[in-house]
Amino acid sequence: MPSVISISKLAKHYQVPEREAGLKAAAKGLFKRTYKTVKAVDEISFDIQPGEVVGFLGPNGAGKTTTLKMLSGLLHPTSGGLSVLGYEPAKRNHDYLRQITLVMGNRNQLSWDLPALDSFDLQRAIYSIPTDEFKRTRDEFVELLELRDLVQKPVRNLSLGERMKMEFVGALLHKPKILFLDEPTLGLDVTMQKRIRSFVAEYNKRYGATVLLTSHYMADVEALCRRVIVIHHGRLLFDGDLAALVEKFSAFKTVGFTLDNPAADLSQYGDVVSIDGSRVMMRVPKEKTSAVTSRLLTELSVDDLTVEAAPIEDVIESVFAVRKEALE
Amino acid sequence: MQGFKLAFNYLRIGIMNEFQYRANLYIQILQTFIALATGLIGLNLVFNQVNELGGWGKADLLAVMGVFTITGGIIRSAIQPNMERLMDEIREGTLDYILTKPADAQLLASVREYRLWQNTDVIIGTIVLIVAMSQLGWRVDFWSSLGFTSTLVMGAIMVYCFWLVITSAAFWFVRVHEIANLFEGLYAAGRWPVDIYPNWLRYGLTFLVPVAFAVTVPASALTGRLSLQSWLGALALTAVLATITRVIWRLGLRNYSGASA
Image (spheres, chains in turn blue, orange):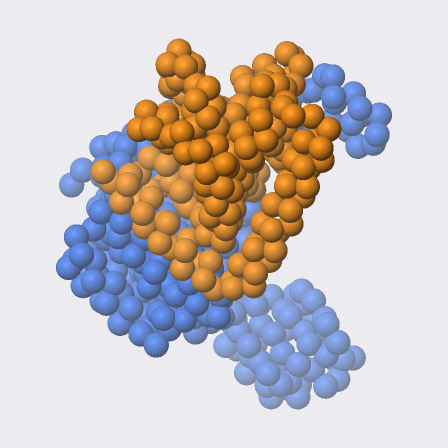
């Protein structure tokens, strides 16, 4: 099958004004500016097949959003090849824009003071969706996300999670073939994150859409993506199976518990990451997790025991560390 | 066609939005009447001293004031709010949503906001204009009303172009609110016909900031002062400005990178 997204040696460089701190340097900057070239994206290449859900990972400033913005036609690449659905995104061809959507977790496009229904109507006009089809799609999504009682409330009276669900309805009304999701679950509670995730999965299943997702929540990526692409400092570090990535690089789990006796010797259980009052966070090798937790429960009087996967940043960090060693 | 449909939909949303804020209506009515009162007092003060100003009689100047109020209302209801929002979005890098829509970005950026209550100025301005015209003995025929309507529309387009060019500067210079504030000060000069100003200021108010075209020219049409040549000149200038504005907007968009990376 031909790929829907095809990127080869894509690069985006910015010229960033640079100056030292202080009044003198600021005054000098009025007359002569020095610029530094920042390689936000540095020759990355990958292909995505129709219907794939791909996690796009990397620490802050890795170049994820810059790549998504180039894919959605907002930024002109500095060099390299970029083709989505056979279009060159930077030309912002209307036929292309009609087939994609961009959802950003920290932004909203619904009218703040009006019920979401009115904003949906506006989307219908922008995308010239036939009325019957529009109503059918809208009701389908409203049903899926359990929003029926909320669509008539002004958006400003909705909770953050409810608002995000509305954003999704608005962003998908034109049934795009490609979804660019940039941190769509940012700041949402766990239940809400789950809802959004299952909605994205359902949309992907029903319409065969291709999804490229960035997220800092490992759970989002685990639930949705079989394949992940990791970038760091604008360079591609890993492209492959999520299972392989986690297996290979996330060798630890984070165990948290509340301890009555702060004097206890914890070094025999694992590496202590932090102690905040009586709350202890500890890094434990993955294969020893169950043994260590049962020992903690029997040998020390611990409460509120939690076991979490290593933070995604840690996993990426280890990917990066390994790659760097390999390069040296 | 899609453009009109879109503009209409945004207008609808804008009006619905305004209905949420009733207090704004009362404040706006108050502001309109204060502006009207100070305008009338100023006019009377002048005509206590002289019988005419640069060839314009008292009723003529009342007509200018009417047009000034109408145009000001149009600018503040439909042009200025859109441009201010656009300025903020360019600076904050939140223009993304309109750029990913399958519609003309300039159109979308220009029709999203609408301040219904500012139209109290349009209504009061129209009343002032009607009073002025009756004082002038209704010397209005078909051609002068056509001239008035067409130059009013051209004036509004020129003011829009002026605003959009200034706003597009934000693509390069980031902070342009100060320049935009300058407009309000300069627009106030339109309260009087531009003929009464010294040459340098008159040219400035005609070609740099199109106040003359927004106010004096439509008022000239109504009071029988507009020649066909001036009308054609206005038409040509409108076309040139609209084209230049389009080019600058496109260049600006290419330069847009969005604040967050």
